[in-house]
Image 1 (cartoon, helix red, strand yellow):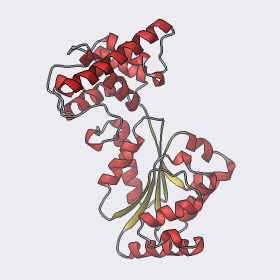
Image 2 (image 1 turned 90 degrees about the horizontal axis):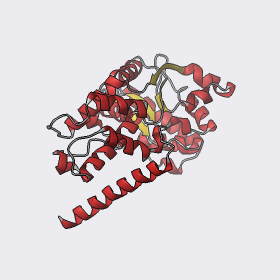
Image 3 (image 1 turned 180 degrees about the vertical axis):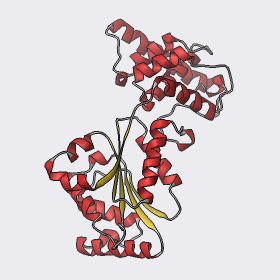
Image 4 (image 1 turned 180 degrees about the horizontal axis):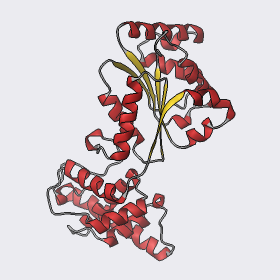
Length: 300
């Protein structure tokens, strides 16, 4: 790959939500502060909404890593579960023994007993669901019933939902009005501005170990911000492809041409050129880069 070429320790623009690359820009910093404040006040439901690729999962992992010690977390990364499956997944996360073998009634009782035990030990329990827009309707209702478990002064279970805007559309339905009323803290994770995109790119390169001259100048960062619409995932994809192209050409300088070719090869940018021949040229160039990387790897 291009690590040695640019003097990098690791790939700076991967799609894996690595918290080592976290940059506390305004949208993510504000969302994180909202989460911590809501959790400390004992609210039942907390919701973070963001478009695809805006960094919800990264924020979710940062919360899991940095949540205060007295919190016990139950993390459900894929909530496309029916109510019984959701209850059992929560029970397993909370350490309820033989959760897979119990009846629903007994399982609910054991979950409540476990929550009361943790509460008596001074713990607060948080259920965190990523991609919550995928929850079936019946499971959303089961989730609401979970928050009925409480003492006279505090909820036994708090719920944090990370989701795409589709969840808000569903919650606007009359069926879910009770659940919507229980969401007391909510934050909408916006895309990055041009200035934030420039800081984001520079930050990731520095974390990855880059120490050379500026690779992405101000104008190039502004163009990347426009074609990516400030979506971190798309910024990563475009920058990664640009570095690949530059390496494949034996160049240490990134240009507008590299960005144009990366955009043509990335459907999600929504900025494709209509000229079919340019599509073919871009695809062919990227293919040549990949082939050259393969053969270079084989000769070392």
